[in-house]
Length: 200
Image (cartoon, rainbow, N blue to C red):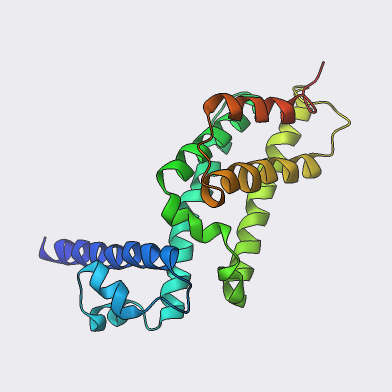
């Protein structure tokens, strides 16, 4: 019981530092943010931050991965649910919108160029994007097979367009441009996309 409590405390403190770091990195450039500021915001000592993260670069990488997990999960939860392809894709977009609305600070790190300064992160981002693309491509291929989507559609290109709509258009509007996107605008955007795919 004591061991479990200790593990929970370690996990909570680590997350506490991560969340504080996300806030500082969001407000300042990576190079301007300091471990001292992050420690103060997390309510811990500077040494405690280094107990969990050996360097600022490592902390930034962990922040980025932490934020990205929520983004990626918003896709996977709908890819695995049995539903029509159109419904699954629409649900992915809506879940994504809710996620970016509720987690602007966390997800801001995903929409900046700063993480790409680190080669290791760049490779990780490319791997995750490829995984998302494969999932969406498979979903569209399923739609073609069951004749919910036209047979002349290139599934991979349609998947890339869908990710651009979700990640760049919607994510960019909310996170970068700070626009309050209305639900009816999302429906309209999706219909513009879907009407180029849906079978007659």
